[in-house]
Length: 122
Image (tube, rainbow, N blue to C red; front, side):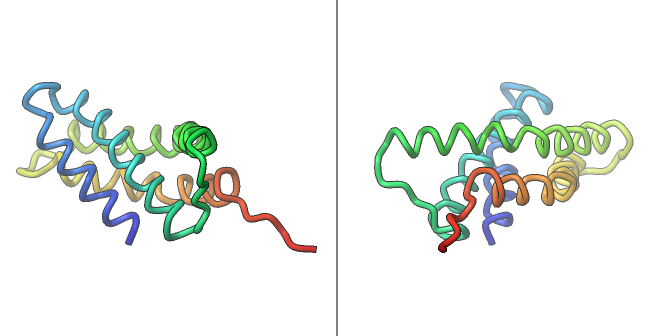
């Protein structure tokens, strides 16, 4: 569910900002917005790792955003390839969806094991 909501945020921000930033610049902004939304949802629901103080939350957010860079490269690459190689109406939305699929595993694993890792009980 978090991924689907993130995809919705991604598409909404992309289409809302493409007129001003172009399809490539808007995609950067939409990825950041989607990653921010998924960070909040993941920390609140998926991994239940909500920190209570602001400083810890900011550190966790920054760690999350840095950990998403590998997935972002895969995601953006699939998006750009789709825009260049597919000539269909709605190709930007298709590119976002394919990009999300391309970065999904990388982003989940880094979030699970680097950002929201659970403390093992002895």
